[in-house]
Image 1 (cartoon, rainbow, N blue to C red):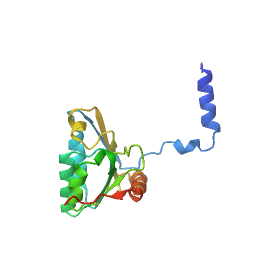
Image 2: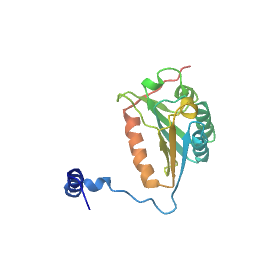
Image 3: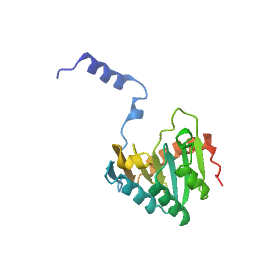
Image 4: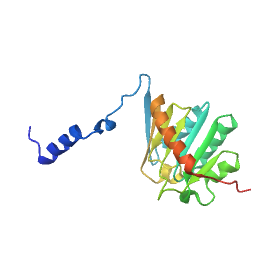
Length: 181
């Protein structure tokens, strides 16, 4: 085997540095699965809406740009059927009337986070056990103009708990979005 000095240093660092195991892969639990979709003109939007429609108890959303009418309608419909929906989004990216304003006006709790140069998260935790994530901003551009990806991890409660904890941290430091009427 012919290893460069870089490879030898990298391997030694991985083996000798304390805490390197924090980056070890965690196997998926039995019964879990995934679904992936891509844009533009792919099935990303359809996958996200189907996740929202599958929710039975609660959906927590972390968003950067949020202008998608189909996603906001799906979240509103979930809210109307008794699913608890809560959203934390980037303040600057949602400073004008956006989908989060619409949803706040419909009684869905929304908070805006201004603690970072960009609150660039894009994920949902559904019923405490499913995670939707990827590069897909909840926007029309993500559907039709951008190269984007969506990954849904089904039945991964431990991973969902990690995402939910991050969401809670962001929610706690964010400010409530006041309704516009």
